[in-house]
Amino acid sequence: MGFHENQLNVYQVRITNTSGAAYTQGQLVYEQGYFGNVVSPDGIANGAVGVIDINPNRTIETDQIETADTFAESTDSTPAIVWFNPTSGELEDATAVGNVRVGKLVEGGAKDANNVIRFKPLADEILTVD
Image (cartoon, rainbow, N blue to C red; front, top):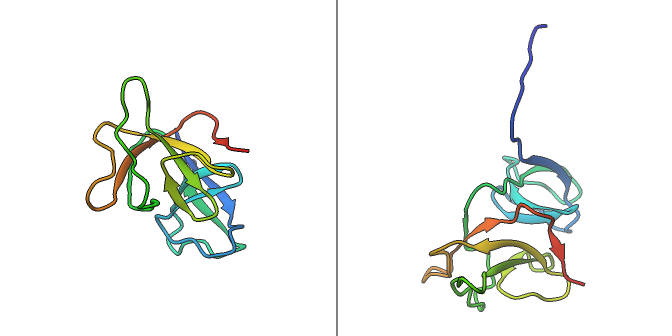
């Protein structure tokens, strides 16, 4: 048989960058119904194919946010939903037309003094606001 590799729980997908701009490694993106971070070492040029990590079993810490937003801590009755704005490429704390629901703030994940949030990506179907 020569060589065989079996991977379990692979959460990386190939996407085509349709944003009109280049993506950099580590950048959070939403393409072809997938939300994740770019893992291609050289990023993904506009129109090119590259790989993003869509693993929902992790906590993401990022400053790729709309800094004017509050990103307040979740409460037992009100989870703090994280939305991705495909136009600006930033995470937001409120829904707007075209935004995509991508995660929930984790405990202690509210925006800090450095404009960093911590959230868990959603494992269920991603919702786009019409």
